[in-house]
Amino acid sequence: MRRAGTAAALVAVATVTVSTGVHAQSGRTLGLGVGLARSWEEAAMGGSVVTRSGLLFEGAADLRVSLLELGLAYRQGTLSASGTNDQRDLVEGQAMLGLRLVRWFKIEAGPRLRAYVTPAGTERWVFWEGRVQAAARVIRPAGWAYLRVGRVLTADLPGLVLDEGVGAEGALELQLPGTPVWGRLGYWMHRASIIGGQRVETMQGVSAGVMVGAGGRQ
Amino acid sequence: MRVVPALLAIVGIGVGRQAGPVAQTTDDLVTRAVRAYGDVELDAAVGYLRRWFASDTATRAPLDQRRLALTYLGAAETLRGNPDSAASAFERLVELDPRARIDELTFPPEVTTRFNAVRARTKVVSIDVAPVTEIRTEGERFVASLYASSPHQLRVVLRRQEGNPVRVIYTGLIGDSLAVRWDGRDSSGAWPGPGRYFLEAFSASNGRGPQRVLQVPLEVAVDAADTLPAPPPLPDSLLLLERRGAGAGVEALLGGLVAGLGLVVLPPLLMPEAEAKPLRFAIAGTIGLAGLAGFLRDLPGGTIEANRRANDELRRDWQARAVARQEENRTRRTRASIAIRAGQPVVVRLAAP
Image (cartoon, each protein chain N blue to C red):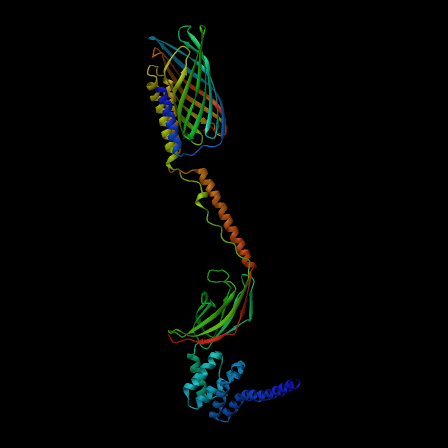
């Protein structure tokens, strides 16, 4: 019921925003980027907490056609617990289909696929998320800050039941003057509470990267 | 049927024979009057002259003959002791020809004295203009030479036949003579357009209103290419905003603050059990500072240089177009010509104010 309520809330936000009659964005843009993220993972289960950290490779692509945006993101790397041999590989991919209703506001939804690879086996999770994003041009002509907040609408965790999943992300993107190259500096986090809170997986990271955009980024 | 044309021919010859002696008699009246004056038959002289003036011949007579007749009429009336009739004749003489003078060798002093008195108080001008004047270049003028009966105030204006004034050509004193010039333009400097006009010279004595007006009908024909209208003013919609509004700066400041604060506040709310990482605050601070920098750069009221330069370029283009248009119109005006045909002048007495 809670997830259905969240979905209804997102639809309501979209409806209200469309009904305000704000101007539509036009044109096409394409962006491709790579980066590195210093990441931290905390896995709490039954009172014990394991903290791992590591450097993740990031790749991203986004395509905007008129109001619609398709965003793809990929992270991969090894997260290790300090002082022990405990480590696991993380592979995560996202595909978000968004609707940019106004220049500064976008809603999007799509799957987040996450795989934990350990010697014992691979654990694959699928989160279906909805997110809203607000952006502002902080430096003219091309410097944008944005804040993104999301919630897991439903999930497919083999053998597990998701209680709640939330995420947030903020970044600053600046275009190198006279070039299609953008620099990006951001922070992201994701939390999944599973089995009545007996298991909580939190991830956060600070990322830096570059993107090459055709037709602008916003 | 051949009898009728023959009868008509006979009647025509008869009428022709009758008309000859009548015209000759009327023309001889002035000669007879002069002779009668010389014989001191003043009543006869006045009688001949009044008969002559009552005939159609007088209105068609040349200026010299009318001048002669009025001179002898005024002289005879003076010598007959009719000062009012004499003054009336001399006044008509002055109106007919303001430059007329009486020969002091032919007429006695009382006649010349009376004439000079009438001439001094009768304010009127005559005009001498070319039958056709063409103005082709900027420097050419329509010239009218005015001759005054005696010094007086003069106002020369041009008006349309319907009455609309076109231009005041001269206002001031006229002594003996005066040449007034008209460049063919109205008071705004434009061609007045083809049509019928009147050149009017209002004569007034000092301290009194105009006594008489000399009217000359003018037929004006203009051969000119139309001038082009001035380019319309630059519409505001084409100009970019030169001063920043509050929008851009406020967006930068609020956007940076909200995004930065969001990164500070949201993680503890969404994942309270996670450890706070200092790098997160560094990112949040960077975003906030970027917003502040954007706000300071886009301070409300600041000049948007790119827009100002673009607007200046637009204004320069418009100015260049306007100057080019003026130059084109100037060229067209110099290529234009105007032809002015002058008619017969008429003196009209005006009612006393």
